[in-house]
Length: 395
Image 1 (cartoon, one colour):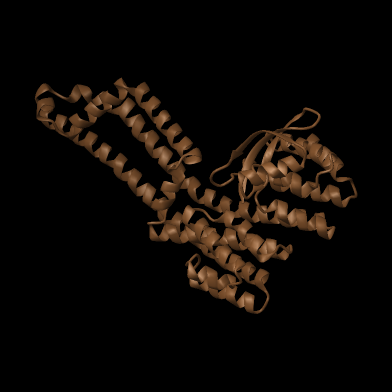
Image 2: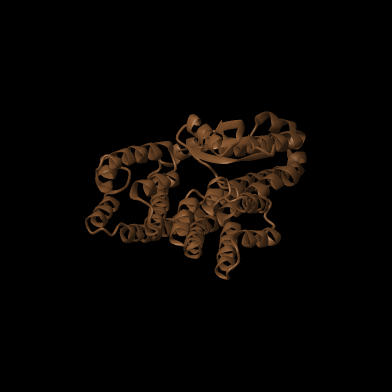
């Protein structure tokens, strides 16, 4: 299924915009026509749909919605109450849009499905099953718990990277301080003969002069470079290129694969427990796969499962996951206990991921300190050597 962004005009002349999942552009047109809308714009979205709302805000809102719904309030009243209390710049207008759609007769799951940049891919099908079972409260709580688990893992990654990044910033700041304020003071120590002969101190002073003379240009270039990398990472192909590079490093590739398995197994567990059909659950969970190759392999797996092949056999054929994962899935299929097996897979690889992050942190911290010490220490040795040389000449 493909995401399409649309702008339509209703019978009353009002313009509406949103997102729609369909198998093709023609199918998307047909769905909008059946709703009585006149299509103004229909654009196909390429790549993975990224959620722009923070997990913390989303998790809090879903739990509040579940509590309000359990208290007996009507759904549109619940959302109206959330509009008044939510300050998130993306979530607040989305809730206003949801209130309008629900007041017009749309279901909560359909409304959520039209906002894939606000709600993750698995929210709508889990809500739809909750609506069919008459138990929206449990569906909302299950979704919030899943988001909470994702946030916990990502928080561990961010925590692991915070200290090394801080050390790196300190290192760069110290180096710039030395070149801008300290090294220029040694310029008077260099004689014409010493400058002609060259040497480490002369090179450092020349580099310091260059940095001071072109400081604004250097800062501007660094800013432009970072902006370019940020834009390329978010909207271009830099993310996929970095992923290819990461997958060539064995230890990082192992961590990345563990993260993918955690995402996929967590999604499969929740969807199957909610009653989603196996093929639909695999298709929805394929959104958790990072990298074009992983998504292509999962699409091939889906086709074979539709033809009647077991999920474990199809996954084994394309080597999507490690052997231990395939065996656990095969056991779950034989015992008709796939949700339990995916829960065990998720727990197993969450532990491996957490352990791997701690190992990286244990290596990264001293490595950054050593590199920082080597760079700053080398500069200081050159400066001290220059002072000693001047004293020797004076003596």
